[in-house]
Image (cartoon, rainbow over all chains, first blue to last red; front, side, top):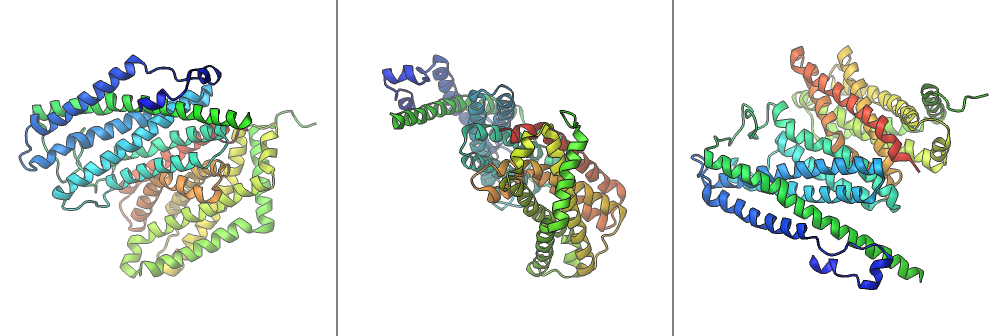
Length: 253
Length: 228
């Protein structure tokens, strides 16, 4: 990604805005994200105690829960980005929201796939039409629709405006996914915060080493990883906007 | 002399009246939605091979999925007509608030979809031999249709501005409408199975809360959707 930021030669920079050099903080955050990500993986694989009933399979839960937490945070950030864009009409807020939704989309995919890998040995199936699983799948599809909506609008201002509104509406599916195991009694998905539903399959008690690992993984996945990814994504979007502007200018000349 | 800025209700009513009059003369929306809904119910009953027992269990799902698909058909058409005949621009130029335009379009869509919903309920009652006629069912129908058309009116105003137009509305609307669908289907199947009131009343409450949330969001955000 570093190559992209160096793409513009000096003369062009003054004419059409520039993203400038790479900030030190970004480098620091990226290193922290990578190191803490590896540390969280190592903790969940070696430090956390082995679950009595589920064995080593349970270790995927640290990634599964934390990636949803991360998705929740960045998709929430996209709501703020959308609202701020509609209020201030500054392109940077829409870029912020777009970056949040793309990162959130990927994190929800991580959440879905780790869940499927866990469910195979524990529930004896990759997928079941449980309310929680269904709503999580619908949530991913909603954000896929967001990308289609963006791609379908040519005028950049219209695109940003409508995408902002839809990004805010789409968050309702995240909220539904979060609360559904608390309002649908027929789910088999265990809850981490609060009491699990009656017929939950595969819940467990957290020991202190498990709790420590989960807390650390939560911070890594919902603060460092999305922060670093979003920042890179915003820079990438700025570069591609500049490329488009340069291209338009080159066609003019 | 007309006042410089027509009041919210008179503007919304004027738009509703315009839509109603056009519909009364052409019967285009209700005709196509109604025929589609009728076909959908028949196709569901063939495809699911519904016997007596299965019918009772799946009828609320069939009812609501049919209503949602039919409403998408109508919402697309209603917004495309405004766009194609240039009336959308005229509405936006008019000295009325954007939320009045939203309320007017919503009222029209709500009434047309509601009529089709009643028709579907009637067809299901006759063909599936399941009595749907009760006060609570009517309330559920009104609340469900209100929610779907609220979210649909706003999203149709968005997708009508895209290249893909008609194809995009179901893709953006169905996932957002899932909470409404969930609450409507749950409440309907409890009511049909004569469940105790305290079991399904919470679902009715959820439906009411969702309706209010979507209405408020619609009134607030519609302004940003159509500005130009």
